[in-house]
Image (cartoon, rainbow, N blue to C red; front, side, top):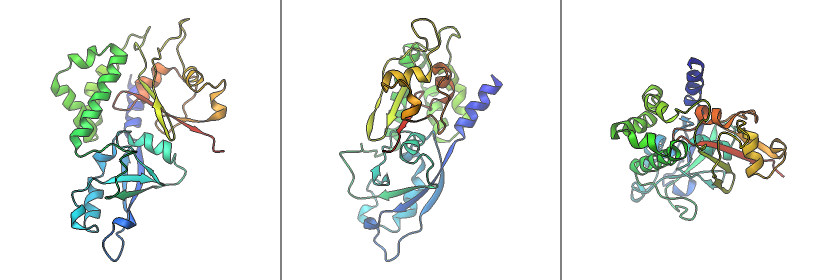
Length: 269
């Protein structure tokens, strides 16, 4: 278990180096502001880590935009704030060029691509909804339902404040399972660029009692006999061995929302 805890801590401490610049059309001063550099937790969400960026750029935009919602794009693609930072990074950049270059906008909100996020409470509501959905798949919702509201708040504050011990003191309950059977279903989302995530019911054991692996999942849902040939499969920034059991991946590489976010990046044509 000590080894498992070290894996969980390594995942928790994952960071993405980010460089944010202000969109030129939003700049109201003669000279453009310096870009803002920061290290962003992979497990967090953009609205939770961009307060300092917003404040940095307020001096360079017109006063009537000070209350406007700031949104971010990467190489022309608006970034969905309800995806974890690490998922966005793996899909859009993948470490090909560091730091990850983002552009901050205060105008022309892309209503067709993004949902609005007027406050941190919206992020909290989304996070708790995902958490409840994941526990519904793993334990029929029994664990999260039996928790007190202070436990829910501790999970949220642990994520917001980047406190590993505070978060995992509660989250470990959501990861409990029987060694023989595992979870009822594996909460996962299979992401591909420019497509909505794929989500289906997948059990940790095959009908013949074998542990389901990453290859089993990819073969089933990507309709590929040899998934590794068709592109990269990235979880938490790494290409996990495809014979890894899904139960182990779910317990160790899931995001705080308790979903295993799998990024499939096709080979560029």
